[in-house]
Image (cartoon, rainbow, N blue to C red):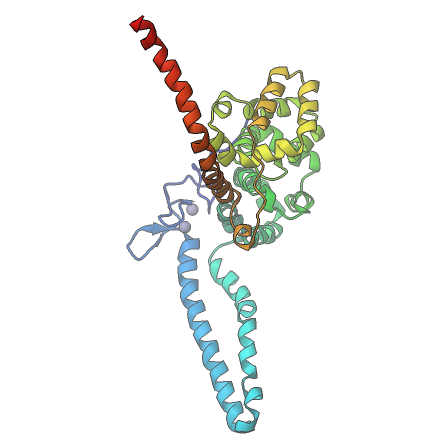
Length: 352
Ligand SMILES: [Zn+2]
Ligand SMILES: [Zn+2]
């Protein structure tokens, strides 16, 4: 396994050993990075640029407002008060402000940064945010990198790329894999190998402990393509590990809801894999996990539609508790009487 420790090298200058972290975003930096924040703490070039860009963008926005207001007043003067509607037309320009600003913001963010210096930081941003914009910038930068630089940066790049992809698998665009293969300039087989050989541990850990929609299908696909059945064995063993099996009902459904959802949706496929790989014990454990799985509740109204599955689950639980109260109190005297009998018995015996 060649999982490179990305904490060891600078995120901006991958050939340099890191000697600290940016106090704002936590990216590793080296002695070439000498920017400081307002409180004189070391920050990276990207954070430095972003702070500066925000100020400039604010001025540009104010400037645009001034122009728009000036246009409205001028038109009003020229057209006369009878045509006030036409005089207000320049206000529509406000709608275009974000589109006008976008290229400027992009340029400002990456001032003094080469594509090969920006690519690892933007991947970290994508990993943390899952923001599609960050992914697009990454693809754009990757295209710009020369063949020579790409070969040199490749190991460092993978150590940032694979976790970012695995963590945000459900957010990737449909054609992500083809796009990646083309831009990384490697074969499909080599790309699959990066996952199944070099970053196997990260892949399995993420797939289980940070599961996402359809990630199980990606693992099945990787295993087939790389002809690596052991991968699925390790994956299923991790799902049915003692640590997960020992969780309470609540924790299991809250923390591993996404994972169980995948197992639930592809139940037959999981059992077939278990049969094929002789994972009898794991098959039983999987079905045990599924019997404890509560599928996310279906929203009943507009308010519930905006709630997360976890919030909705919590709400249903409370509703159930409230609903079950009268039933419980109704059955209580009975239980109490039964209990009383049992308690009474020894006493009676004693008396005899
Ligand atoms: Zn930073
Ligand atoms: Zn550096």
